[in-house]
Length: 194
Image 1 (cartoon, rainbow, N blue to C red):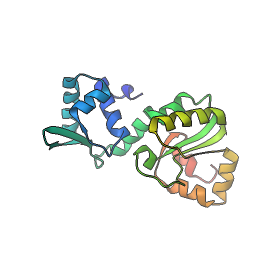
Image 2: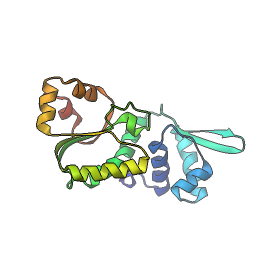
Image 3: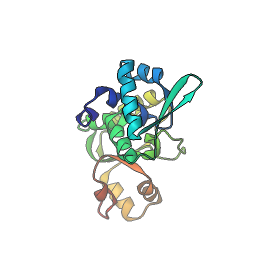
């Protein structure tokens, strides 16, 4: 999907790497290995992205390391784009029909950014008439990919609307948390009707 917006295949791979692990630093050879692209093409993209202010580099011993600048003006938008184009976000979109009638699919921003989350935090919240075995398959694939448990909550639309109207603490905390909307309209999510 990112290829729709970015012409360079190498840039898409580099952006996906950095925005899939925004807190990490990578040296050039590691970026080449993970993207499986030519070193000169990777260096060109790194130079462009650093000049743009999206990446920052520093030398450590004899290696140049790069990391993403979280203060970059388009950082939030790029995080959301990558989250919908990669990993569980992309799988939810690709399997939307198999999952049933999905009204909302939400990823917590902390989860997307790879931050440590509390055990009771919800990483993935899905509202609608959900086919639970299909969702379970996607969650297990994500857990295998991440190497850790994924805390997810499926909920019917009726229950979500009821609990939101009653100002249920779980729903209020979820709505107050930073998120990535994979499916659904942010305004409809927040309004009184659900």
